[in-house]
Length: 198
Length: 198
Image (cartoon, rainbow over all chains, first blue to last red; front, side, top):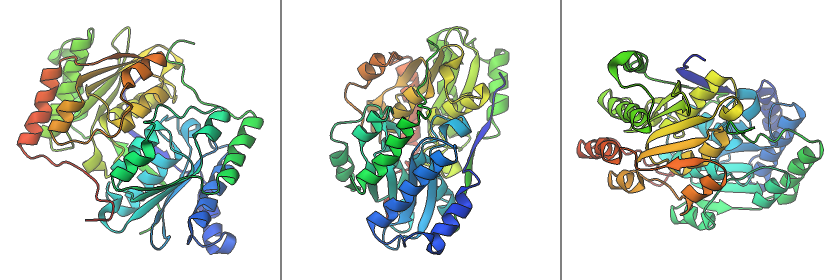
């Protein structure tokens, strides 16, 4: 096993035409929270359909204008990286576009996720500089589909609010949860690590 | 601002010769927790000296043999990615070497971090498949140097233990905390995001 000095995360090839179609009239404009969530959910569903990862999608947009700045889908199995969750991918790609680790350095930015972030992604949100977080499905939906959300502080929404981060949950929850449920029903891969104790 | 479809994280050029020297007798063998921690601390100090990021270093080793599998230093400012913390970098590079998102798929692996992980990295630990976590400096040391550790569950060590993850804290705490303290004294950059509200 040789030591590596770099790693890379790349969106699957289907994403670019999919987004192009959406922005060119194939989807509604990214004006309201519901319209933005529709795109995050569509990404989660397409990621399953294309067999490129788990049923999670996320986008980063300008809070005011809805301008799309970052796209993410779950890429754990495809990239071989356990941190390649949709939210981390979307935030990182938005930071590449912004040429800054601080997405708040220009205008207020918003992270929209098809599902409430897991413990890791929740921890990543304040570091990214986004001004607000919008979630579709919640923890219970993810866990009833077999996913582990990790150990989060019970009062996580208040904690983010105390940091000046606006949080909206349950935006199109049913539509988002349906994608998780369908993934569970088709017995999609649930990637839980083994810790060397198989 | 154009949309990006991939991002990359690369260790600074000084890391390869630095590690080569360490493994070829420049440092002690990676047999005990203290010896492993010495390398994580040395990486944290060198990262500051080389001006390539914040005062944090981490390694992933085989728990039994000490074989080095992954190296990480904080690369937030250099990479422009807020998620490029030392632990995430070390875990991701170890996963690249293992060609798997599950570091537990072969032998039990260990993450050694010069500082107790922040909320994001703590969330990343169970997803990575490592069997154990070893920390040097703690939350208080990091926060008194000006860093934000995020909102972690109060009982995080028990939570990891309940998941079958062994945790050791305060291994060479003083030596690890000294690097944080020196960074604070030289007024090193503390990268706190602005959320569009400067």
